[in-house]
Image (cartoon, rainbow, N blue to C red; front, side, top):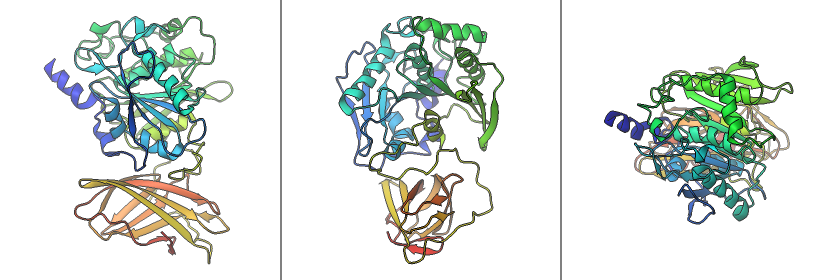
Length: 448
């Protein structure tokens, strides 16, 4: 048991190695994470933190992002990409902190009888109070509320879709289990739980009946479900993914055979289950070789795309959003065909960095000041110090010496006249971390 506690503290708490490799600092924005001490009915005794981007529409979407066992809301804020993407797409992020002990740390209550009933009490009621607070205080759109989370938070994501289907429109569950998988508190610790040791194997009908029984009076539209799991997860076994698929496809009256399957990125095997109108109701990702370490880079964006909120930018974007929402495909070794910025008009690059100790993240926005579109772009710059790019999003970034080359992703290669695209990266440095003084776009110097 001691070894299991150590494992949970190391990987299930939301302090995930893969996520930490992506975002290790707060978003580069004047907005900040704020604790709310009085948000309404709170039978779970939970803490609430909220991130509200400076630029947002009048009625922004609301995303509830939940940590793993032994973690916290501020910890998941630091270690996931949801707040950084909120700066780009203008939605509000709520970060609840679980306060109930489950024998090995504080976890979201997905085991008690009260938590399994609509309006029954415990953590689900507290979370809905947080959503209502975001609506009252910031004009959050109650027609666009979404849940996501990792490990215990992924379990709570599926839980909230079942218990409060009228509140949540969709959810993205990372390393979760089906609703109703845990019999009680004694069944929760992974080393002894029939659920997380893989002993619970119900039929799709039985899984679906558990969801319907959580709120028998509900007859409205059910929230869509996106499910993520690593094939090498040794804490919450990969077999739980198929049980979750069985549950949610049954809730929607769908069969067990996917209507489509593909590999949107290397090692991401995706199955989609659509209704007769071709609307994807359930989407499942099996991440080949991944352990208990999700979400990793790019997965938060895929969740937002499934929610459908990446096509609505903030009123005055902090960083301009991508021009399309299709997930990127793995980059090839063949460079894209590019066109230079229109002659005599040029381009502008805005570079914003957020540094800490020996690392930093940066957002780069490219604006086409010309009268015709740029089709395919390559941006280059030279570091004045020893900065070294370690990973990137929304672009393919390569570095040779102190020369950096960023090429468009498959979905953002066109920059319309007067339009912008942006990408970001993470890097290391020591000493000074000066911004680049010159950028060239497709061989043409840009103002910066």
